[in-house]
Amino acid sequence: MEFVEDRWKALEIIGLYYKGPVKYAKAVLEKWPKSNGIVALIGGAAAGAEIFYKVDLLTPACVHYYIAVVPEHRNRGVATQIVQRVEKLCTAPVYMATTMEDNAAALRLFTKLGYTPHRWEDIPRRARDFLLKATCGYDDDVLFIKGADPREVAQRTNDVEKFWLETCLKPYLSL
Ligand SMILES: CC(C)(COP(=O)(O)OP(=O)(O)OC[C@H]1O[C@@H](n2cnc3c(N)ncnc32)[C@H](O)[C@@H]1OP(=O)(O)O)[C@@H](O)C(=O)NCCC(=O)NCCS
Image (cartoon, rainbow, N blue to C red; front, side, top):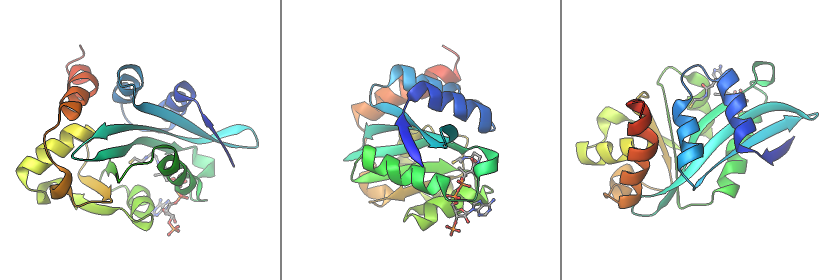
């Protein structure tokens, strides 16, 4: 498998194979300089993609924002390799992702790579509000985090406020 850094091709793949709106992914790529996308290629054809970004919590964090694998390539380790590659490209003390509780593949993917799942409702409110802003994870139930406990890193920062305003709230309001 090969990887190429190509944010717009990554958005195209996500748009085709991720069920749900991709306006937030597009906003991150357009409005957040600390974002990027990679595409995994098998035999020269796209097999999957991820869009990710960095944001400063108490320490810098890398967020796996959108990941999707082309259906015929699923369950063969493609997403595992994509996440590992992104961790190398987007080195940070803390990594995060969010997902829905019923997404068994995503739950298994992040758990096996050392991420700890936390249901949003189990995280104390101040930390939860802050981490929801940092991940724009309002449509998901579970936060995955590696490298820290959610309470330890959740301290209001200007970076998170700016990220949330430009790439999460404004697209939500269709501004
Ligand atoms: C989630 C997704 C990216 C996983 O991609 P993938 O390439 O199939 O994942 P991998 O092959 O690397 O598998 C990762 C782990 O999940 C397991 N897994 C894969 N599909 C699974 C499924 N449908 N149910 C349960 N476990 C599953 C694998 O067995 C593997 O665990 P293991 O190594 O212990 O065997 C892919 O299913 C997808 O594109 N889904 C639609 C988009 C989406 O939901 N994105 C995630 C939003 S956070």
